[in-house]
Length: 70
Image (cartoon, rainbow, N blue to C red; front, side, top):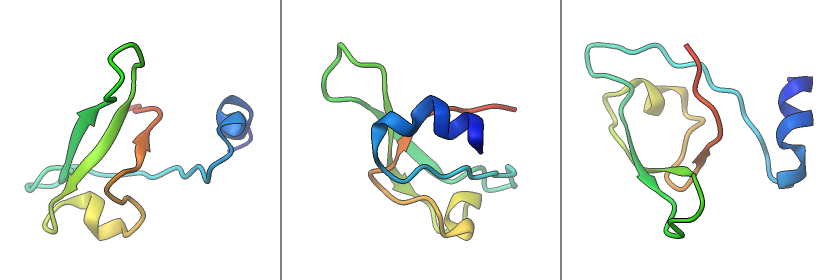
């Protein structure tokens, strides 16, 4: 978590680390890009109530995805 805070702490918002395991229903999130096409960013625009993201209760529509790792 210290590395994450160091890397993204300047954003000033709450930063969460969420671990999701893909189920038969997938992760259950829909993503959209930033409205300013000069910025590289992905935001959660939908959550499937049968997917893994919904079950954690931590991810909400409008959240920005900062990193994805395997």
